[in-house]
Image (cartoon, rainbow, N blue to C red; front, side):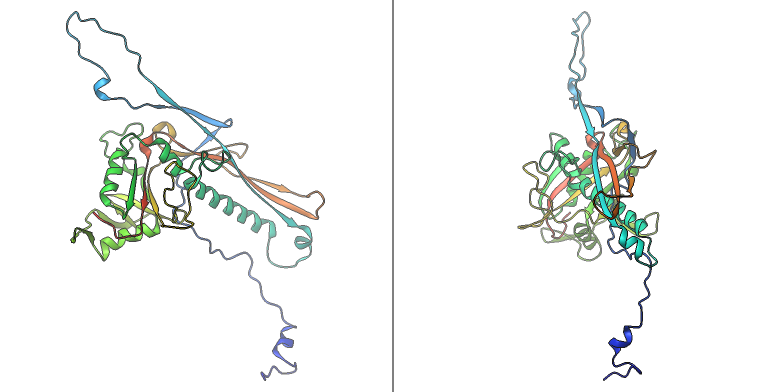
Length: 353
């Protein structure tokens, strides 16, 4: 028997003690690759934002040569596509019991902890939906995330939306970046330079790229190639970051294993449930909508540059409780289609050149 002095047992002695409690909650839900904090924002008055997107036209049909005295016809063939991006409501509210708040003597500020947690949950939900939200195949209450936007806005030759159907080929990354016109000598609407472009991908595929450079090499037809266009550097905070052809690779915990066919327009497939795990990569150009980039719209009475509103409730009817609510009105908006590209249907296998 353990000797604890005067008391019969350790359990009896512990009845006279009290644990020391640290204030707050130690966080371990940690995300990387957050889109919301990277996106430029635009405040909207009203429930939506409308803008016109230039339609594609063939250079050979844009004008014509004419001879002397040849009759010149008047033309009227210019069209645009009108885009309406509606603000969507994201809300989380929780009650807080007045008995707990009024009688418990401890170091925690219950409302402050609760509000911080609600903001974190709304932010994480928004970041998730920025990838997997789908108005057509999931719910009209949602906004379209990157998968839905990429599927709806791809150009006719498919170079902005590539179905890999297996291991990632780095050559498809080149095709994707070329389709986004990142090499324009004079940046124009929808064709800004490299400084605002990232490659957003799940850690599973980013690890494969790193491994191809550092350990395994890139194998094609039994021949190992050097991955000379993959480099490593440091971001503003000093953390290591991988680059492909000078474009930063951003690892995202929000991009997860997906069902086969996710974002291909047939249904609302998204996070993996069964079958073969597939993954996606997005090339994203951030910027204001009028410059052709990807932005986040927000509205309502949240105040300038604040896209969440906190609403406290002192009393809840029929309950001895108060409550806290966090509200956000927002939606992503894509200016030019060249500001978003996607490779989907990628499997967890060795990367090829």
